[in-house]
Amino acid sequence: MSSFHKIIVFVGYISLFHSAFSAAQHRSYLRITSQEFTTLPLDIVVQAVASLFAVMWGVLNIAGNLREIPAAAELNTLTWETQYNMPSFAIFNHRGKAVNQSKYVPSSGKAELENTEL
Amino acid sequence: MTLFDKIVSRELTQNEAIDLLRQWRENNERKSNEIAMIHMFYDIYSGKISANERLMLKEQLIFASLDVHDLLTEFQIDFLLQEFPASMRVMRYKAMVREAKEKYDEALEILDYIIKADETNAPARKRRIAIFKAQGQITEAIKELVDYLKKFMSDVEGWQQLCELYLSVGELQRAVFCAEEMLLHQPHCHFHHQRVADIRYTMGGVENMELAKSYYCQALKLNPENMRATLGLFLTTTNLLNHYKSSGNSAKRKEAWKLSQWTQTKAAKRTATKKIKLTKMLLNLAITE
Image (tube, rainbow over the protein chains, first blue to last red):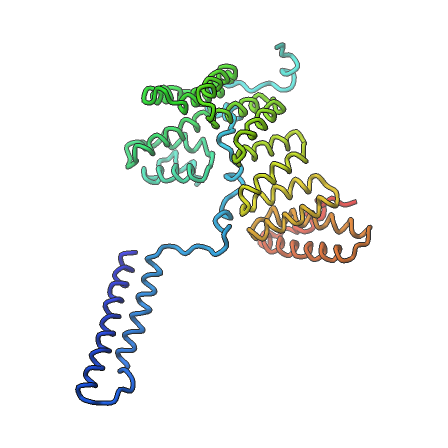
């Protein structure tokens, strides 16, 4: 998709330069035929404005996604889950034990705690 | 179909799987079961990855498999150790395997060795604290962590952990200090504002309620979508209203009343589709006299 926009920008620039060139040509033509300059012909004006907008639209699309104005906007996409996940303090004695170990025996409850002799 | 099913039925392409892993790594997500499953069902190392990323993927896998207690991962660590014989980082993973096996003394031995060899090795010190936490020796962990934070003051994660530990033993005054420290490190993060406010609200009392109100407001200013802050603000203002009703401070009462009304409409808007009378539920929740 971005190659399409690049072509638009390229064509737009050429068309913009072409309209500038046409304007200069028009002035020199007027000078040669010694006429008074009033306004540029309509087709040159239309071409210049149209190609200007084409270039603007293309550049906007090439430049990538626009960013939010508030400074903290990027932080707002975070969730509590990822923000308060602390990998370097993670501990491993949790229910993950039961996920993979077929020989895992869950403790039988509080009674076991009372009987342990350490 | 959940993501987990998609992984198991191999619906993702290899590149999608690698991207997924990368995304989780960058976003600091735990998702250990999914990561382990991706490694089991996809041959990701044959994909287009740099040598650097290969190691990062391995590290991610080791961490994930420790989390799901797939202790076969020790082989992986041994391979890494052959590749990098003197690496403290790999040694730390060895210690983590001991931890997962609940051989805490051995793990501590390895970590002490690492710390002796390299005084500035912060991750190893953090693991030491995690071991105390895993053993349930919270006071010991707090002592170690305070010691650690004296040396590494700019560690946000450390402050965060200390805050959680203080909360778990009910030392709210100290927890609030840690939360404020986090706030100083990342002043634009709405979670930290919300955290301070949560703790202040729990502490109770008019002064703390006023503070909680300000912090909730700041959190909402930074992120208007923060539902927890919205509800917190509602509870706080309701509480304040009750107080000012009895003490008769009309200016402050009016302000609290306005805020309360505002949060109610905001909360109602968010839950409009769910047909719950949220405000009624909240009123039941609020601490009233």
